[in-house]
Image 1 (tube, helix red, strand yellow):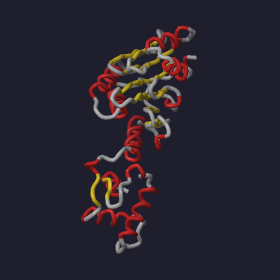
Image 2: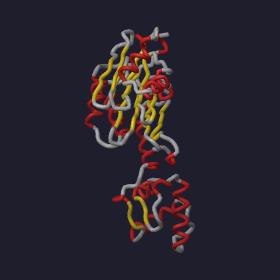
Image 3: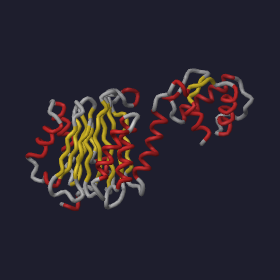
Image 4: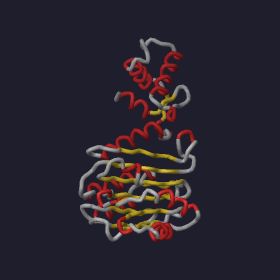
Length: 286
């Protein structure tokens, strides 16, 4: 059974200002994102690892939804589990209270740290600093909850990380109606299943996620005129959306709209005559 232990470090967290809950994780294990992270909007977040029990995820969220605290949920999950000493779990509840548990049979270094609105934990790590630095980095980071979670696991890796190496990483963030088209609560759900630098690769696709689905900032929306229009028109032709730069305004904007929709930039699409500079920057680098 020990061969199935997942050597992992993770952090569960809550942002009370935005109403988000999330988990970020890295492991020397294939597809860690399919096992460790669990979260439900308005309820909490859970990471189940070491000789992980995936049932801790859905069972724990049900208990959190019933109003039990993070500590109470861990007690209930582990009390009747004959293999609890091989388990590790971190939980943040609906109020942002964190709790973490490390069984006595988890391989060194193994342990956890609880701070304001988070629980960080890891096993088979190079050192304790992997967890402490992860927590401190989260506390000091700025930006969205996803930004702060990414900062935390990067710090954990720099501090030592998994003693067996690196393979997979994942981030999950939930918030009421924060998903695509406001039709789900999943704001971010990204996984790197097998990569020599999983956190770096996770960060790369997270930045793409923010580009495609992040909201435009007012100070980055400008008029399509002068040099900006010349640049856009040049890139539309270079990218084969225009056959010539000598076009009517309607032809120009029709081709630009086609480009936006082809590249999945609907969330950054502006009213006619304006452009998000993030889109123009992307066009330049294509």
